[in-house]
Every structure is written in C-alpha cells, then in structure tokens.
Length: 252
Ligand SMILES: C[S@@+](CC[C@H](N)C(=O)[O-])C[C@H]1O[C@@H](n2cnc3c(N)ncnc32)[C@H](O)[C@@H]1O
Image (tube, rainbow, N blue to C red):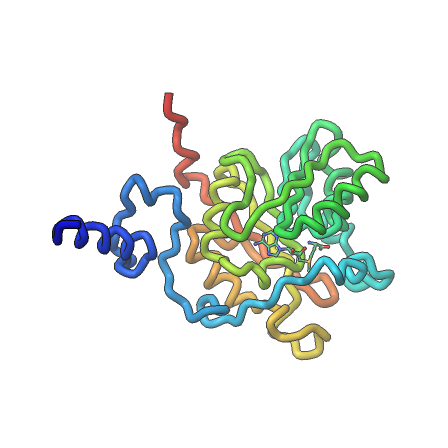
C-alpha cells in the first residue's frame, strides 16, 4: 500500500471510530446515520448523573406488584395527562405493559399505543399480556438504546414511566424521541423524586427536577412543568417546540 493510501486508510479508521471527531465536526453523508453523540461524558454517566443499570426482565414481577397501584397511582397519573382518544402514544420502556394496557383504554380503538422495550424478553411477556387481554391497539416493538424504532413525526405523546434514569445513551435516545414526536408533542418522564431522601428507592433510580431539565432541555425540548401529586414520583412534562423542524422529506 502506498504511503498516501495508508494515510487515508488510517484517517478513515480514526474518523469511523470517533477518535478525531469533535463537537464542531460536520458529519459526512456516510456518517449521517450514526448516532449524533456530541457529549463526551465519563462512561456510565450523563451530565454529572450516574446512569442506573437496566432493570432485568427477571425482576418483571416487581412491575405488577400489588402495592404499585397505591404507590404510583397509574390511573390518576394518566387522568392528569388528559390523553385524547384517537391519539398515538409511545410507551417507551414499556416492560410487561403495566402502563400500555391502561393507555390503550384511553386512546381507544381509533388510537394507537407503540409499546417499546430494549429487552426482547419483556416484549415477549408484553405480547402475551396483550393477547390475554384481547387488546388490539397496542404494538409491541423491540428497540435499542440508540434506535427508538418509532415512526418519525407521528407520535403525540411519549411516556417513560420509571425508565429514563436507566437509559444507557440518553443523548441519542432523546434525539430519537424528539424525531418521533409531532411538533408540539409531549415527552413525559415519570421519575422517583431525587430531592426526597424518604422515597425508598436507590439514588441512581431517582431524578431531581433540576437534573431532568438540564438533560432533556439540552436536547431541544421545552419544559412545561412538573405535577407533584403522586406519593413518590414527579410527572415531568416536556414539549417538542412547535417550530422544531419536521422529519426530513423522503428522497424520491
Ligand atoms: C423499571 S422498568 C419500567 C417498565 C414500565 N415502564 C412500567 O412502568 O411498568 C424499565 C424498563 O425500561 C426498559 N429500558 C431501559 N432503557 C431503555 C431504552 N433506552 N429504551 C427503551 N426501553 C428501555 C427496560 O428494559 C425496562 O423494561
């Protein structure tokens, strides 16, 4: 290989592995599909927060524990969000569908719930639960931390109930969720209160309002407010601004 070609090959390898990329670099068309990570946080952290480990499917029983209704009040949570019949709601990190089944009743037969999770085992249990309940307006979809598997610009509301704090790649996940939302669409994070030491949950499984705002607003969302009537959790409401650019037009 000539010196010139060897140099070009080494440069290409370095670019692809991200070694030479900085925040100012404009991605080339070949890189356009790669996740747009701008930040360089220490591993396992994001904007100064320690990212929680993913809750394994082996602990799925915890998601349907008897005490959950009293502790998390899922119907009151959904009442407060005033979900319109006919709307499209993404239940991201749906687990076994504890929230998806409830949301399905709210959107009704004209609406759609896109229930995603990164663990195929969760998706299998969710699918079994949908079948057992005879629910037809929920799609169970396996996603990844860097690919939300949601259609672009079609979602009215993204819900993440007890999920965001364990997203391993929050920057890329948030960008994907922003793309999936319609302009003016809402992103709702339900998170255990990090400000309250009496909430009996490990610190990395909680969020403060200030930290959530720091992270989510940094990805182009607008903070609309937090609802604080649940016993242990914040309901944090963000919006994709109306003037945000829509999905890129499809090539002819
Ligand atoms: C604590 S469980 C909550 C499940 C469900 N939201 C509920 O309230 O019952 C968190 C779920 O989020 C999923 N998860 C973690 N990171 C995710 C990501 N980046 N995208 C989608 N799901 C994710 C996990 O696999 C797990 O099933």
